[in-house]
Length: 391
Image 1 (cartoon, rainbow, N blue to C red):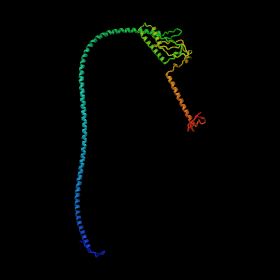
Image 2 (cartoon, helix red, strand yellow):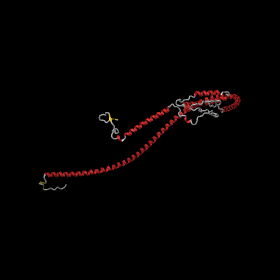
Image 3 (cartoon, helix red, strand yellow):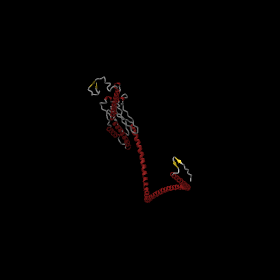
Image 4 (cartoon, rainbow, N blue to C red):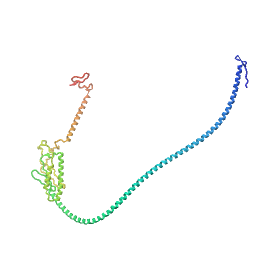
């Protein structure tokens, strides 16, 4: 216990009074409680140290356990990954096996279908073999019958050969006669027939004469397109008639050329309807007598061109007009109409451009009625406007 010193007087209060004694007791109790508290704190510190040591030991054990657990977890993770990879590999193998099995099933089904079709083909071939065997037997029978027929036909062929030899002799005789006829034909062609005031040019092909009377006017040269086509048809008909007559003269020596000549001339007179120009347009003073007509030559090119005595003078050739007919064709009418339309459009365009040029003159700049300002204006204008009629 600590010593307590007593003072005699402190600020007018005397020490050793009741109050001072109470304070001393309280102080003593406080010191005593402090000592107890210190003891308890020391005990608590000891317990805390012991507990911390135990806790540290336990924590070390826990850390070791956690390390062990982590290593085990890592091992488990690696094992799980390996298992997953193996599972994927097995799954891929499974899908491959499934696809392979499906392909096998498809191939099996196809092979079954092929087997069915092959079996059907085999059956059809067997039936065909049976049919062919029957046909072969019938063909063998036919061959035997044909052999019998050939022996008969050989005898017939021998007789036919003898007849062919006779026909060849006849053919050679006919060829000699044909050559004689051709010689006669060439002689007849080389002899023209000319006579009378109106001369006629005639060509004989296999004793055929085509007579074309000369025209005293130039109307035959003004031929429309339709008449030109008809003339072409006539020439074609004459050439066909000459060919027909060649064949007829080779087969029949006694045919008369005068009959054929009259037939061809009648055909020409029926078909040659040529459109003529009116007499008012072409005066008779322009007519030139005796124009040489076209002459027809046969195919053997041995005919002679017979010229008439009167021909067209060289100076008067230019007098022949170039127009084919006075009648206007639809094509020329369309052309004239198109030219008229182009001229009208051209005139309108020029008129418009001329008016535009006048509007651009200096007199039009001040007012729209610039050129008219010096002219007299008459009439009534609307109130509030400048419209006037100018003279």
